[in-house]
Amino acid sequence: MATSCSISSASSSFFNKISQKDGDQYAQPSFAITISTQKQASRKILSIMTPQTSERKPSTTGSRVFDYLDVSFLQVKTGMTMTEKIFSRASEKSNLIPGENVWVNVDTLMTHDVCGPGAIGVFKKEFGNNAKVWDCEKIVIIPDHYIFTSDERANRNVDIIRDFSNEQNIKYFYDITDRSNFKANPDYKGVCHIALAQEGHCRPGEILLGTDSHTCTAGAFGQFATGIGNTDAGFVLGTGKLLLKVPPTLRFVMDGEMPDYLLAKDLILQIIGEISVSGATYKAMEFVGTTVESLSMEERMTLCNMVVEAGGKNGIVPADATTFKYLEDKTSMPYEPVYSDAQARFLSEYRIDVTKLEPLVAKPHSPDNRALARECKDVKLDRVYIGSCTGGKTEDFLAAARVFLASSGNGKVKVPTFIVPATQKVWMDLYTLPVPGSGGKTCSQIFEQVGCDSPRSPSCGACVCLSTTNRNFPGRMGHKAGQIYLASPYTAAASALTGFVTDPREFLH
Image 1 (cartoon, helix red, strand yellow):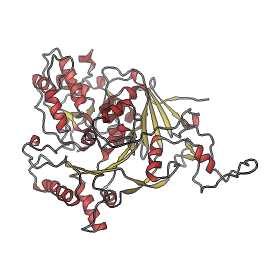
Image 2 (cartoon, one colour):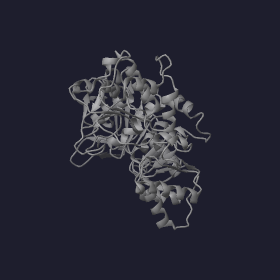
Image 3 (cartoon, one colour):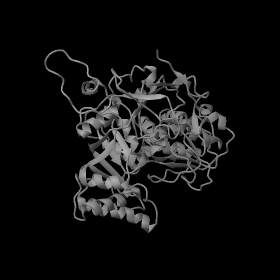
């Protein structure tokens, strides 16, 4: 009989974990041959899977005799998760199980100005100075970190990736030449993870690798996306392949109508708070349920963006009508979505009733140091930052503007509040898109009205104090003694208006 257990007193009413040994309807395979446990010290069964064996065809005459040494026919009948299916396609293998090492064909490789020079150096060292990349149309190079700085050594990184892109005829190099005015550079995009989506490089069923830990953002499109190092990227540049281990999958089922004071940032902070920053180490995190289905693509990107803060290998959301609609005007490339089988193996399943969640923050100095925003009302802030690949998308700023509008039109921010759009397109949206319910005002007009700083140039910039970013480790956003609180755009805007960590319901309700 299936059983569920409460995880913590702070969330026992809405957050339940069901492990495979509980007979979960999604995870139970038809046959159990071997059982893998977490560590020798732990007796808890975490997964049930069939072992890898050589292929052996069944007898074509007489009755089938069950042979415990021959389980190849069981493997064929065992379902696979989304991530396993993507690996299966990319490795040209019919069936895979977690823990297998396979060579995969890479669909897209992304690098930027931080890691690009290192990856290029590895490529030239191992393949030769005159070597050509495996496919100049499957490589995306996006300068986004060392952009608006006068440091010549930082600028040199951009020069290196520009020279390489010209040498290799890289089709998708989004260059910036005039750093004094980003708008004078039509090819310049901004933060790589948002630009990848906006430019149509994210497609269901594919494998996207990038030299940045938050490459996992692209999992929102139903693809496998993860960060890799310079050595791996240099190898992919030359071969288009990489040896990867198939990760087991944790499934998060989120159901219920999303309260109007919550955002996807609250959902992922809740999850990381439950499983910790190491709870998903080298695991896929699959997000499903009616709540996830109701999220926009940008909110799904927020959800997947922070799986790496839980140690996750990748985050993934099943592609649906929302995904296909977003991609309509962004790519003409064919793609094939994949979905987890009903009998797929999941290491664990977590069920969340989102109707009972409240606005959250992550207190210093870790993304899993979760607390209710209302419990931190006495924390005085020095400044607020709204931006980054996590919280610098168009919908993030629309959410912040909604809170500012709800302050009766007379509210002023009490602390310096920085607005940093992720990409050039987002920057344009701030000045052109009307905010619903504002009488035609744009985000930039509302931000100016309440006293925020003018929107900065789009880039992966510095972040301090209460922030919509993804990490609050010591020194991550400035001085190592800085106290950084992570929060949703709703909570960030509400806190800017009061100067203290503030539950956005004080303004939205």
